Amino acid sequence: MNQDINTPPFNLNLLEAPKFSTETLQWIADRNICNLWVPKAYNGLESSLTEGLKTLQALAKTDGSLGWTVTLCSGANYFIGNLQPETANHMFLNTKETVIFGGSGGIFGVAEQQGNDYIISGEWRYATGAPYLSHFTLNAKIIAGGKPVWNADGTPLIYSFVIPKEEVTIIEDWDTMGLKATATHSFKVNSVVVSSKQAFVYNRFYLPQTIFKIPFMVFADLTLWVNYLGMAEHFLEEAATILEPTIVEPFALLLSKTNQQLYTFAEHIALLTTSDTVITDAYMETIHKTASASVKDLSQAILNLYPLLGVKACSQQHPLNRIFRDYFTATQHHIFSGR
Image 1 (cartoon, rainbow, N blue to C red):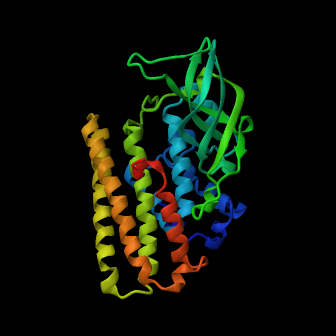
Image 2: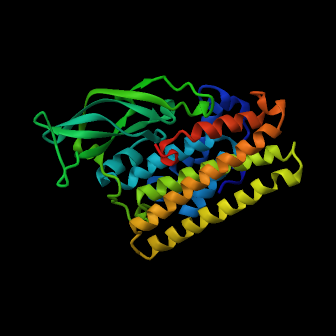
């Protein structure tokens, strides 16, 4: 983990702006952290699961918008493992620009198959880091001959696609109380023709690194969970400058327990993938339920402390206020909200 992640040179108040400054984006690019999970052969950092999670946690503790953006964009770049080799080579090796994927996990569009191509149209919510992306990822229902295509189990056939930013129109609709600089705008695509080589499927991997043996559900749970944990740690750190130690001690104990839970899961997942052991649906559900309950506990702990912090914490310029707004904006992500 880069040691200077905890002490960025830029003014954190600038991250309250609608998008990152050029200086902030350069800081991210210089550390290559959007390629956290990308193999070294593709100019990435090739972090292990535990190392990568610690990096994301440190970023989230530094600033919510910073951690959230890098988490979602590096998580989208993780899809390099799902891309067909020819496509991965073209996008990551045959370019001089910084490759940053991002997009939506929602299924808001359609892709009409025509030979080896697809014509994609739709509007998707929301793409974290939309102004910073080189490529957008999206999910679409497949249509052939004007009719939906179905899987053998009766569910609609859905593919994911990666599309260059030039083919996408950003809809600037991100206007929230927190995570402002994530610029998590919606986007639309209108009759864009893409090759079938730009299609991919979650959990179908072409690269051999153990990180790509992790089911995407588990990967998403752990990488987002560390963001809530990092922001909560930052909140406690600031609250401890105002409140007596006995008041913040229960929160500190909760954070210690949460760290232990999260990294126990991460280390076990790493062990299972290294030994090529199947990660069962039951174990994946255990991780998800534990993470969901943990985020609720962290949320309640923050709400318990907030009324004790005084008017200072109500000032929009105070770190406690910014962390509060960032954290509870993040809780609206569907992954742990139960929606």
